Length: 503
Image (tube, rainbow, N blue to C red):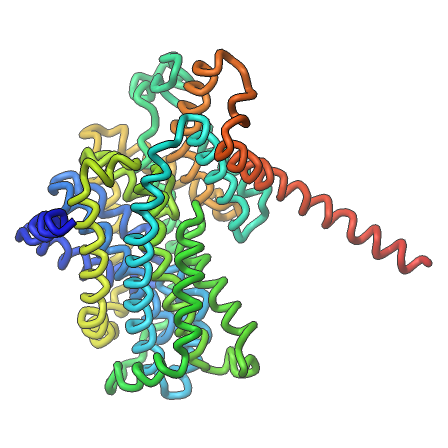
């Protein structure tokens, strides 16, 4: 273990990794602080850059940018009441209320401090949970992998904030996209319509860039420009944070735990962790009447939770190739691109690379404090950037990056097409995260299913005979039937109420 740790330090001690991590940190802070630009979009735009980096430097950029962007979304939320990222939306009103009370320094300081603490807690969960789970995963067969992948798809529908039926529909769109091309067990062209470029299928990365970056630009150009940031001089930002840590230590711990659990669930992510933790903080608070008036308690719990979920979301990604959230889905694409194929053997054959990822997460969250404080100081200038200047630059990055990935124009067309698809889906309440999960995991589900049928000579019984497979099957089928049961319950409840009233 000591030798592995030394090797990991050697991997991250190169100038390439150091420069890449620092640059990605600054980039993530800037993108996250611009209202409407998500951490996922920041990460997706980095993918073309990773094409030219070494594997460890490429992963370092993803780790640093995603961690920083989640925090810096708190800055416009506190100062303008406009959350920079979806994860900051849960407590933007609370932070803005604190700013109006003259407590902007306390709100922003809590954001940077508890985000860093939550991020480190998430890394510890990754270090503790991943190795023993990898040992168990080594005994998995294709039957277990099929049910596990199916369960991951179903979890995305359970945690969706929109209608579960719409989430399932979005997931099926993603599965349909994953079927395109000849990379299937039969090697037969599917849904190619004679177009040669479609024979290789739809790459997940251009699809991700389209639905998150291009669609966001389209939405931003159709919404009013946010109000200008009033100029003000900040006092001491970190003053009082240690006092808050002692006062709300249980809320911080609960936020870390909730964030870790939600991060491990496929398709959930930091924004879901923030909403759940803020709701729990209000529910179990001794002073619930203060929430919404500028009370820091909810910021402590939700701020710790959203960053804790970032690192824990890598647990299913590294073990099974099942993304914990959309950022992890992008990370999986980068891992495959760099030859670090996710799976339990990654922890034995590339152990030093795994330790390098742990160390990069810890360094990124430590860097968050000084860089975050600096970002808060210069926020007044960053937030003055007009949308009409920022959005064309983002579109240019999308076009250049998508061309660089495949070195042809088809990548640019793919990004544009999925930008339109993402915009239409979001406008009608269909979660794009569920579609992304379908695109990323569709091939895995199909290959595991077909391989299992070949092994069992067409019999379905072996899918349920192994104990672990039977448990995973019960969970997956339960998750599939849950939206139907909820729909039936909602339909029957008014009838029961009407029958009771008539009596």
